[in-house]
Amino acid sequence: MKGMKIVIIIVVAVLVLAVAGCGMIFKNSGDAPVEVGGLKNVRYSPGYGDSNGGHHSTVLKRNDAGDWIIECTERVDFESPEIVTTYAVSADAEQEFEAFIKDRNVLALKDRKESDDFVTDYSPWGYSFNYDNSAIGGGSYELYSFGEYQVYSDKDYELIKELKERLEGLKGEKISEVEEQY
Image (cartoon, rainbow, N blue to C red):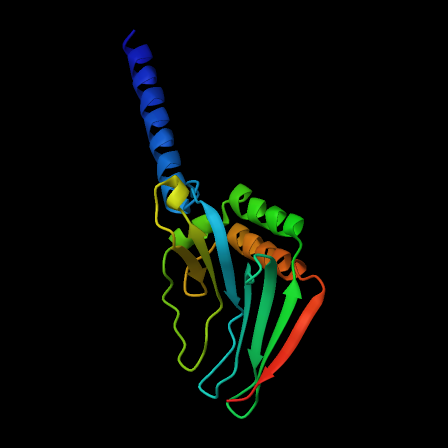
């Protein structure tokens, strides 16, 4: 009887530790679902740029007519013009992209720990997502972002790679290319 009590106590202790450990893993992994309203825009910077003025960004947003577009901005250096290229995005493709963000809980990446990395004269890669959360009790401009100076798992990096590919894949017909001098 005494041996059976010890076995039960050990089993209960192991179960309690396992449940607590799973809770800690879930909590620290940042995988709690992120509830959001309507997507307003997504901005991606691939992480190059320096004090010479070079930069690049990709923005998924609505144009003045309310249609989804991707606007890519690029400049090699201060001496070069900034090139803004605009692409059409189909409503269906945008909806699939928005569903991907929600279904794969991409926004949970914002909760990853900060890394100890830092580089001067360098622009780190990063994503920012702007949502109108007023329909779910939040603000009309809620920003979620994550970037290079955070700690990611291999699984996270696979998700980030897929996010980049899907954002790039949204580009439809080229609408315009404008060169802006400064």
